[in-house]
Structure formats: C-alpha cells, structure tokens
Image (cartoon, rainbow, N blue to C red; front, side):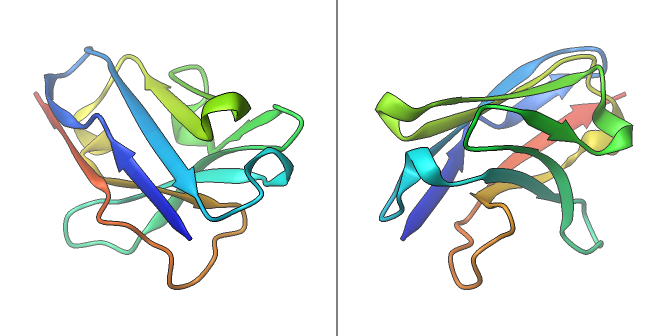
Length: 114
C-alpha cells in the first residue's frame, strides 16, 4: 500500500497550492481518503477527508479555503488550498480515512510565508 502526496512548495500568504496524492495497493474507489498535516514541532493532525461517494469533510480551520476532491480513474485525490495562511505551514500527508498505520509516505512540505 502506498499513498504519496506531492505538490507542496513555498507560497506567500494568500496564495494557493494544489496537492495531489497517488495511491496504489488499495481499493481506491471504495476507500474514504484523508488529508493530514504535521506542523513544525507538532503532532500530525487531520485536515480533510473525502468519502468514497465524493463527499468532502473539513476541519473548521480550513473550511471555505481548502477543497478536497478525487479522481477514481487515476487513483488520485487532490487538495486545493486557497487563501493560505502561515499557520498552514506543515508537511501534508494523504492516507485513508481513518488512516492505515504504517502507510504514511514522506509527505509534501507546504511553507506559507507572511
């Protein structure tokens, strides 16, 4: 099982990034998928998920700014992040929702400068 996030980078506050997550080894179309992040010096936290039916769920701090989506034909999920804030700086990961232990990839670093 592999779920690898990509698309991170350095962006100014107010900017946008689109993260992608390519999955393999899971029944993708029947899986709920999640996005998680680990800010510097903090524990990993839940950010958003998208159900197998395509229904997105968000933590309160990103509602209205982040949009999760999925493309089952490509075994890929996306996280569109708009109006980024410095507090969004973190390593972002994708996994199933709830997450499968032992399947965390390296994540992708998002740095938002003020």
